[in-house]
Image (cartoon, rainbow, N blue to C red; front, side, top):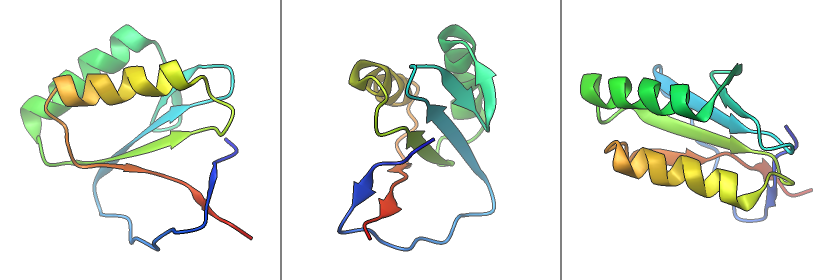
Length: 93
């Protein structure tokens, strides 16, 4: 994934336990770097929310990813009660 650049980024230490969700430039979804369908992603997030609603979610969206696909993931996270979400970017320059 080619992450979008952000001038105001923070260096954040990754927690020991987190879930990484990716959306590539073609709109494909990934869960912890493994390809996954949207339906299966929602099932896994529902299970994760039932287990630990406070788990850290890292969203890695390619800078050319369809915005609607990214919004689907964000809506799904909110629906499943997962609110500890960060969007991964790369530092400008």
